Length: 163
Image 1 (cartoon, one colour):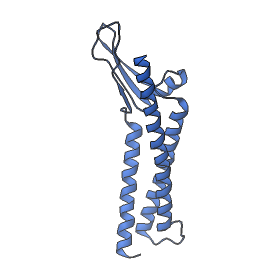
Image 2: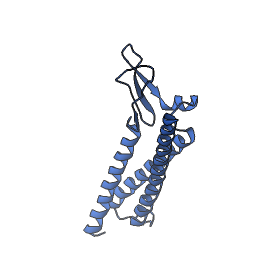
Image 3: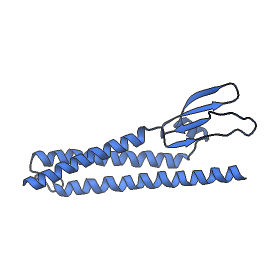
Image 4: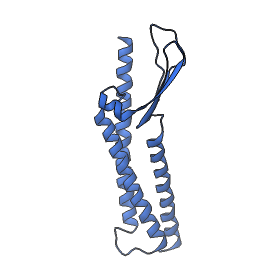
């Protein structure tokens, strides 16, 4: 394999690593949803809620100071009081996990193609195209499900606040 092709395969390795870092950050962050609850009966400040895909924090002031409570999004999904439905949450987690899987396979094949000349077609540059395509497909499902669910959630909450 010539030098130009090896460099391009190595650059695909770097891109795969960046994708893993971004997906991991998206899954680990607690900033998926941020809200400022307002109590109608009380004039309290310092209220905030922020949640990620797995964990969240509520800081609520009921008039005696701000109380901070950590909560599990999964437990709230089971209770039926979460900011999203269980099916959308499961789809987001599954699609993110599958995109991580295909991206990891792409990392392995990129490293193999950088070091040695592959014998099988699936292990060569065509395989890298395949793993990139699969990872992008699952990432697009992940993005579509998360943006759709949050747009619908905020529209429902605005309608409830007005009515």
